[in-house]
Amino acid sequence: MSPRRGTGRTQGGETAPAAASTFSDEQRAGLVVRRADQDRTLAAMHALEAALSAAAPGRQPEWQEGVVSALGVL
Image (tube, rainbow, N blue to C red; front, side, top):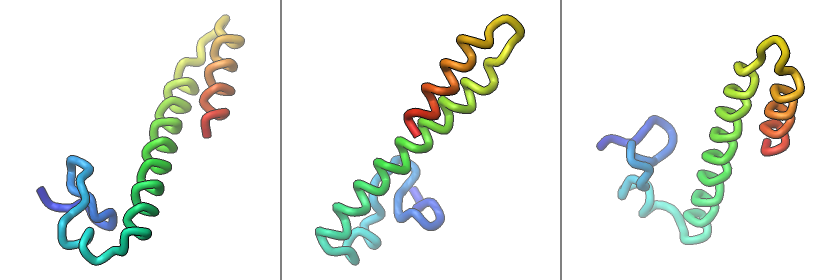
């Protein structure tokens, strides 16, 4: 698989071998933390999008709770 542009990761999330060998252990550890933060943020954004799209007449309290909950994760 080819790496995704700018990430150094393949489609499966593994680090591309050429890119991984150019980083120190400390840098690799930082990349792992950064990727986890980015993945968590992306999941939270998807949850927020889903909550925002669930608005419907008569469901404001549930809708608002979902939106506030999703924003709390961010």
